[in-house]
Image (cartoon, rainbow, N blue to C red; front, side):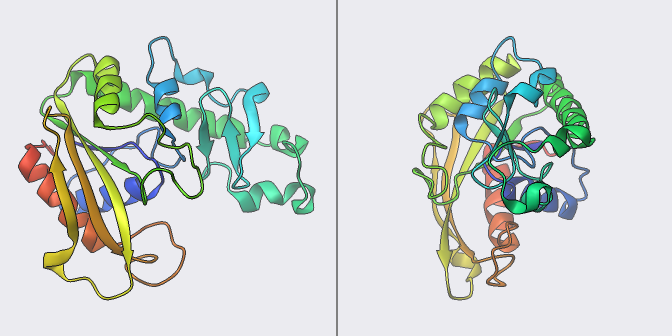
Length: 244
């Protein structure tokens, strides 16, 4: 299985496309459509956490991106609460959570989605076959938009966190960073580096991607499908990840 764990939405999109191309049905997981710094993984995968703790009214705040952040978990629910929707309350001059949000059903729906997808994550404790967790660091640490997003994060700390949560160690982690290139991609020159962890935690890799969605030059979050296909193919083959 390939499980996206952030930190941005590109990971979930590209993993889903990859699985579909391999005729494998994908499931939804709690970090698919959130902005997920390492601290958010720590908060939501720790012992004692239950998914009904997310998005309590007293914990909501405006994120720096105009969406809604959960201060208890540090998750930014960017797709559940799109900036355009949030800014429509108060004519785009918001300084605090708009009262109209509490009168809508957006919070309840987002809570329901998180609880459902978190249950899918819990099922991985009893998964047969080796799991591959995929995390994208964009351009690395510090992140240009969230400078502390990956503070304290590496393969070793991620491995310890996931092992404690899953209660087994039958998994590997792929950490991806991207280098943006202007020219067309050459299929034999996409993967800049591919470094397996000496302790067996997984792989750190750097790939080349063109700007936007498949090189369209926009700010689209989806990324370069051909680049992700290459790195995910190499990863599942070399790490013996079970896709079934």
